[in-house]
Image (cartoon, rainbow, N blue to C red; front, side, top):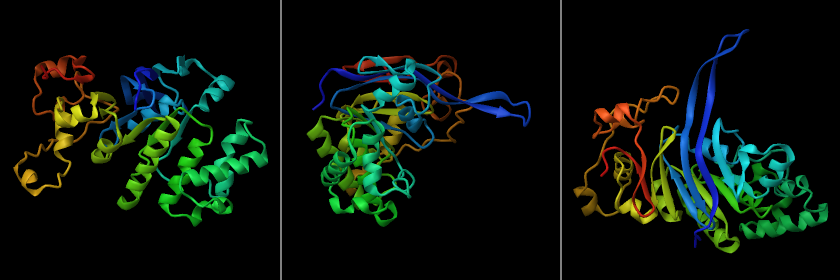
Length: 327
């Protein structure tokens, strides 16, 4: 279970991608504001679920935390060290403690390497094991994720999607990290396989005291695995709360609309409840609305929502929301 000590502190994180024009004299004419000033903490041993619709900046947040995208501004303090200030060898050393499980198990494994080489590569890159030690460790890791150690000499194309994702998990575990960013690790898999992979992640978390940032858009899966949940919309975090609190008492209109779309497996309850359908399209991150980013689709929007960006407020212990209309 999560302790109270903070492993990762994200402070006013911003990541803008430049929009360039011109063929010879290229100049910047705008920016895609993928992540627009978000702050949150992740405690040691917990799973923070990060949810939101496609294009809201979830994956960019995960990559900016690991410095795969260098942030435009803000701070990412991991284990007391600000990663934004690190470069070269210093950053490489910190990378051992942070790993990522990618969304697409087909694209994230090198088709020319055997599974044994893929899982053992981090050990050799960081000079943590000789060739024979690495082979031993690979066998242990394959067993750990529920695969036959004899599969080490096979290539990724010989595995199913679920098995490939297990290989991805084994690779992430090779360096004994403290933080794993799971970037929609189950969205490309069949529903029957999804539960197996999530159960595997939970077992491993218990065994190695891992901390997860679990990025997803499947709200029922996030409810199953997360300790706390952050809801993201167009580059900002709208609401952050302990899991049960968020699902029982969503405060932000966007969270309410998201949760109303999750089917309930009880026909009597399902028939009685109100669906909230959001009007209009999600605005472009290159030109987000003034004030509150959600106001163009919000049923409660008032004039203040267009003029002032809502403040990030703690409404009850651990339950934060950014909305003018919540009192």
